[in-house]
Length: 306
Image (tube, rainbow, N blue to C red; front, side, top):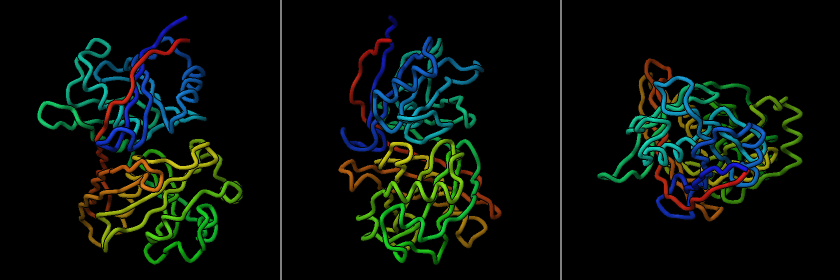
């Protein structure tokens, strides 16, 4: 039998038992992909990460990310939480991590900047690994059914429900604060939408990210994420969806050059309040920079045996 050290952290929160929990296997050498999937299912978190030596020694580490059901190419809160943890390791794979990390992932290289309060590491900031891509739109009635809302609760004046990605795809749509509070996943509607729109190839996920504005502009939002077909009925903090949404909303702004700092609340209705900070920039009409930032809190540490 082999033992592997692990830690857990709560991500996108400054309070323990808030935010989104993450399991991290600190050195997964000798573990197969099948075993990683089994461990992720055992953790039973939205995602877990497994750290391996980098293929290119100029990078910090190779990071594999698994949901309860499958491996994914990129995700926000796993990178923020893993960066937070590795920044506090005295040495990882023969090198001192420092405050600028670079992870090799299936979606590409992910750059992480450590966030400090004085000498204390309190969180991390990551850059999205891919440029904004938008895809098909969805009938508002179909989207509304997925989140158990009436069709007229989906606001389409600014945009229709749209597939957006900066590394992992999500259907994003706008609603109002009252409707957002009552939203919940409808499994049958998700299945019908996946069949209608041919969504089986979305990295194994069909996820919706529904949001409401907390003011007149885009700088303050509240959101909820549902992906029941991936056994994730609701997620308390979704960094990759927040990055995609922030980039998409900035792309819709009328200015050719625009920078926005967007604070997204999530997890409130679940009793795990989270705060995700997105910085998105558009230059000459094209979004060319997207970062997400959040705080983290350590929770548990131990070893697992395989």
